[in-house]
Length: 114
Length: 108
Image 1 (tube, chains in turn yellow, brown):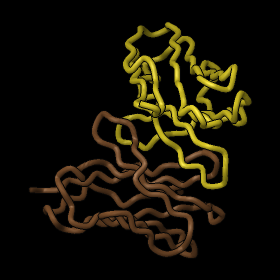
Image 2: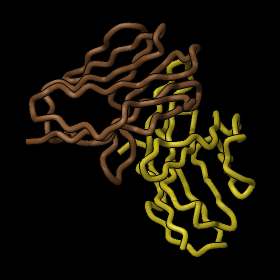
Image 3: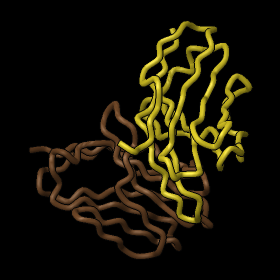
Image 4: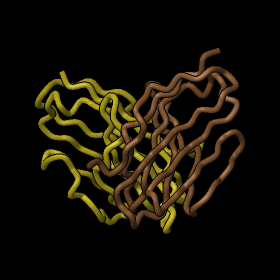
């Protein structure tokens, strides 16, 4: 399967703990995006990379959220000092560069903060 | 005003009927538009993309775009129970802005 992969698929943590999620994009895609989706809503954009450069991060929800893509391949999203409001599905998508860049999503990581 | 708005659901249609989904967007400069299908508990799956005014057909799906009216629609012909899902309209401006989705139920 050459689609976008995400790990872990599920994460249960206690409030105040740090969590890290990984995303592996489609191999030839140079853009990688992170979104968050809560129940009954469409995905909400968080940040994106073109190769290893993080081009937009102002939509990250707070300074507890950070993302990296150190070698322009896989990416990680870290949430520090988790809160119950962080419980959501975290989605990664990738695309080629271009004007009409179709974005393809991974299966997501479902985070539950107790 | 939300950036992307979809007609509120849920939408229930009998098997074999046409399901019609509507979406409006606020940024007049938007150039590309997508429809995603999302089954319960799963991630969004891209089913249609449209960039030019008019209709685009792919199998049982037809997307329609009217940039002057800032309106995008999706028609599902010959609806099947497997089409029961939430359909998300997305407007692309390097990032995707999504509507809240319309849940479709196809009754056998």
